[in-house]
Structures are given as structure tokens and as C-alpha cells.
Length: 222
Picture 1 (cartoon, rainbow, N blue to C red):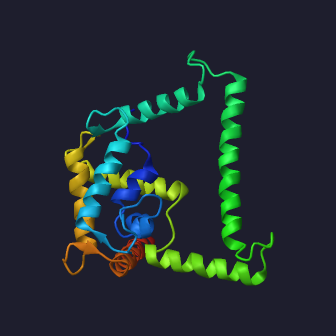
Picture 2 (picture 1 turned 60 degrees about the vertical axis):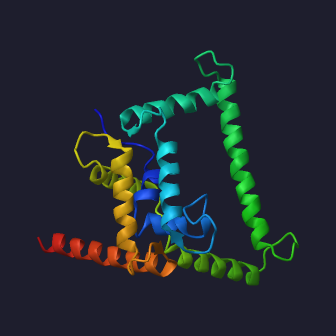
Picture 3 (picture 1 turned 180 degrees about the vertical axis):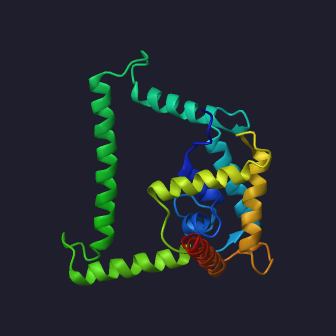
């Protein structure tokens, strides 16, 4: 069954408008669109980021996003784990892969701890914890809110891909992908100056939240 079940978090990252776009693009978060980290995404930064994301998602390099890319990514993941390239995963290879993932997680935890432990005492005080929470709130404010994760983010990514697939052929071409992302950018650019500020991203997020609540209210009435 050919579905557009691609890397949905990556899809929503680019196409998500006032939610995912705002969440990840501000402040050059994880290689986001705000390349210079000034809190404003220019049209040039947006175009460069959209092109970069499409290239990354188009796993087989055929110029379209479809079920074949999903299979290509699976093959790539398998090949990374299959270190001896014999086409089979041994217990040792799977254990090594799990150990590698665990090591990356531990490294991220250590970095988070170090950021909180501002006096390098080896422990986190209540004041440091409070400062960390405040810093996190400020970062979320600049990016436009919390990141979209998990099941709900995946469902939203699916909906966005289907909307981008304007001819309904279950494949998103580069032109469709770019056009959809551009429309989202233009809607967020409230003053039409060719740049999207943190305030505009936040406003777009609020508008989307209000529309979502209206739809939920209408469904409950029905």
C-alpha cells in the first residue's frame, strides 16, 4: 500500500507553518532555516532550507518523495548496522548498534547536565534548575512554542504531505514541495517584507491553535 509515510518529523519541520516551522527554524535550532541565528528567517534562508530538506528526504535521489524513499531509508539504516556488509544482522552487530545509540543518548544527557550546572560544582541547585527552566521557556518563545513530537507530529506530517501532493499521485515532486513550503512562509510573513520574525511565527501559531479549537468545537457540536 503506497502511502506517503516518509520521515514525518522532517516533513513537518519544513511544511508545518506556524507550528513546526516556528518550533525548529528560529535560532538555527538543529540546522534550521535561521542560518545566522538572528531570530528572523529571510526568504533566502527559507529557500535554502527547503532545498536542503528536500535533498535529505529524497533518499533515492529521484526527485520525488514517495514510498520508494521510505524503503531506501530502511535499506540505508540496515546497511549502517550491517557493518560487515554480508546482508545479515548478527547479534553482535545489533548489540553494537544499540550500544552506539545509548552512547549518543548519554552524551546528550551529559551536555544538558553541563548546561544546567553553571557553577561546575557537579550538582544542580534549585536556582540553577529554575534558571534552566526559564532559559528553556525563552528559547521556546523565540521559536514559537513547543516542538511537535511523537504520534501527533507524525499525523500532522502525513496531512501536510497529502496537501503538498496537489495532483494526488501519492508522490511529492520538488516543485510541489517548494510551492507548499513557500505558501506557508508567505502566510506567516504578515507584513509581506520577505522575512518571518519570531513574533510572526508566534502569531501564526496562535492563529492555527484558534482554528484547531474551532474545528474541535464544531465536531463536538455535531
